[in-house]
Image 1 (cartoon, rainbow, N blue to C red):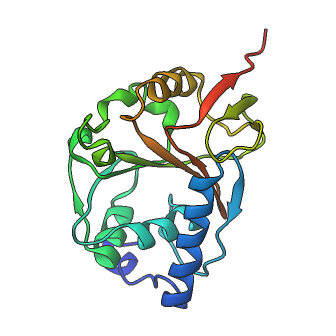
Image 2: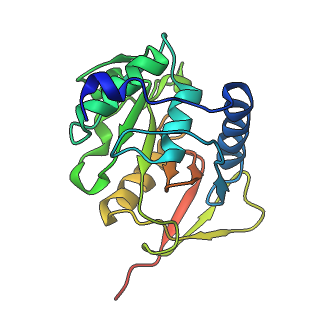
Image 3: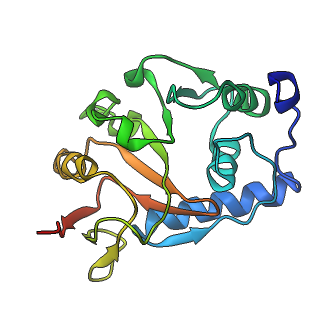
Amino acid sequence: MSTNIVTYLPSFRDSIHDAQRTFRALLDANARPGIAYQITAEMSVPLGLTAACGAACLTLLDLDVVVWLQPSFADQVRAWLLFHTGCRFTQYPEEADFALIQDLAGLTELSIFNWGTGEKPEASTTLLVQVESFEMGQPVMLTGPGILDQQATSPTLPRHFWDFWMQNHQAYPQGIDVFLFTQYAVMGLPRTAKPEVYYDS
C-alpha cells in the first residue's frame, strides 16, 4: 500500500462522538491505573497501529504536538498521523510531547525521554505503548492514587520496563506517564502508580 493511499484511510467514522468516547476512556484509564477500558471507535488504521492506539492518536495529537515515532513503525503510520492530526515529528526523544512505541523490548533505555522539571513536571513525555495483552505478562501489583487498595495487572511488558518504572515512580513529581494499548483497549500507568513485581523464581 502506497503512502498516498494510506493517508486517505478514514479516521473516525463519527468524528465528534468517537473522539469524545476515546477521550473519556483515556481519562478513566489515567484516573484508575491498571484497569483496562475499551475504546470503541470505528476506524481504519495503517498496518502496525492498533485501532485503540490509532484512536488515541487522533484524540491527543494536533498541530501543536511534537511526536517521537519508534523507527520500527512503517512509513505509512507517519503519513497517516501527519495527514489526520498535523502533528510534528522529532528524531530526539527528549523533545517529544508524545512517544509512539510498538516494540518496547526493542527500546532498552526509557530514560531518554523528557521527565519534565521540578518547575514544570507536566512538560514530560507521555508514552503511547502497544502491547500484545493485558493478561499474559509478568504479574504486577499497583498501588497509589486512584487505586482503592491494590490493583493486580499483568501486561506483556519486558522486564526492564518495570525496573525503569520504579525509578520513574520514585522521581515524582517528575517522571513519565504511560498509556498501554491492545487492539481495542487502553490501560493507564501514571507516574503515581507504584509497582510491586512478582518475578518468576
